[in-house]
Amino acid sequence: MKQPHIYGPMRDTQRGAILVMVLIFLTVLTLMAVTGMDTSVTEERMASNMQDYNQAFEAAEVAMEEAEAWLGAQLDMPTANNAGTAEVWTEDGPDPDTDSVSWWAERDAAWWNANAESASGLQQVAQQPQYVIEEYFVSTDGQAQNQGNGDPPPTRVLHRITARGVGSSGDAEVLLQSTYIRPYD
View 1 (cartoon, rainbow, N blue to C red):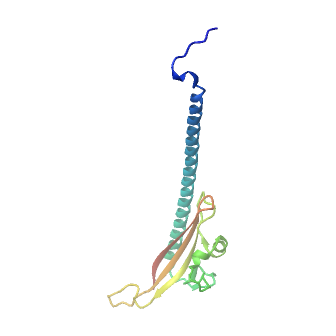
View 2 (view 1 turned 135 degrees about the vertical axis):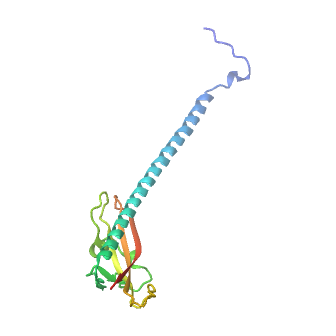
View 3 (view 1 turned 30 degrees about the vertical axis):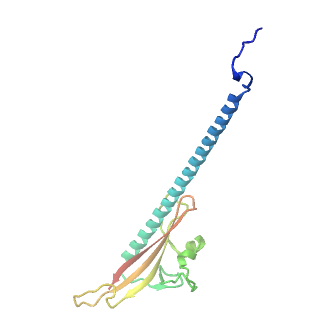
């Protein structure tokens, strides 16, 4: 059999260079695909964590609304104490130590389960939301609001509500606070 005659300088240098180039190209494509998959998985986890956080936030809002509704329904000023045996705590009652850290930043889930009031009826959360009401400030001399009409000012109480919500996985926890002003006769 007669071999074809190759003319020119490339005759003896072709030794599989295309194969090496294709393998390098396939390696680069594989790395790009793996990186894309890794990015996609990371973004999916981020979206899942954000959804869990949003569920925890909404649960804390439900607890906040329930605490505000409870305060709004009270005819007489609720009795506050610092032992946690009443529905309302005295200011900083949940924080018996005198460090510079706020009590709600120091308390774990076990403390909340033992001392907080629970809201109920939420689906798809790992734990029902909870709240703590503190009697923050009591004004009987019109400091909270000027009356200006000569009537004796009602007792106005500023309540600090701290609500805790947990997401569906139990990993996301949200704490919300509000100040609720309530006049009592």
